[in-house]
Amino acid sequence: MTKIISILSGPGGVGKTTISLLLSYYLTIRRVSVLLMDTDPSMGLSLTLLGLEGVKEADRKRRTLPDAINAVYSGKFDPKYFIEQEVRFFDVKFDVMPSSPRLSEVLGTKWYGAGTSAEEPLMKLISELKESKTYDIIIIDSIPFYELRYTRMACKVADYRIIVTTPREIDIWRTNYMIDTLVSEGIVDRNELRGSFKVLINKVPASSIADKVIQRKWSELKFESIQKYNIDVFKSFIPEREAFAIPVTPTEDKRPEFMDKSWKIEGKKVKGSDIIGNITNEVIKWIDLRK
Image (cartoon, rainbow, N blue to C red; front, side, top):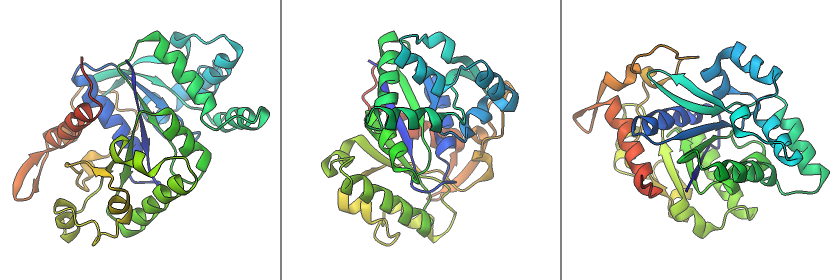
């Protein structure tokens, strides 16, 4: 059965798209079949994987997410046509459904045209993809929380949600605000936040902040929502290191730089491959992925 994971964030720039890519990379290494879906009209993920010309070509041929949604509503959806298959990401390949600036227009038409809930267009598409039984996991890269309907859509269609943030006070405040809004607007039941949501902390500097993250001192970091809603947090976190940044269109057939670099965490040398590998293992256990 296909599992759906949405990657969410309160602010932008916290590494949500990078996490989507790294998780897809490591799941693929573990022989998990992955479809990575870009639901951001600004196309950051799509541009990273396909490059500018690749995105232009997909848009010209109407092979993007908004086109797939239209095809579902017209009864003409063919998964193979709308998915870029075996897109290279360093030394692995996985499938991608790219976005387009036209996504906002298409979703707006669906949302306002028939009074549908925000999640309905993507839910219909996900249902069609599940029917194909092609993928173990569909990872949805969403936009930051500045348009409630997009975040609602990403939450509602998913079985599991990963919230990405940095330990910076302003990013934590925005994350707290997003979570509180999801509850107050009735998008998520507060009890649902325990179990189907998990927080991943990225870009942790080698400082006293790292010590607070390691010791899970959420009150000192002003991360009230973790305590208020008893949300799970990944045991592993990602250091603030340039090596973890994803270059545009990484097409070379070689291991990513971060895999073989190491950092001192709690006095121990830890490789980048161990950090992301441990996060991936946590995900596999969390969603009970059995191959």
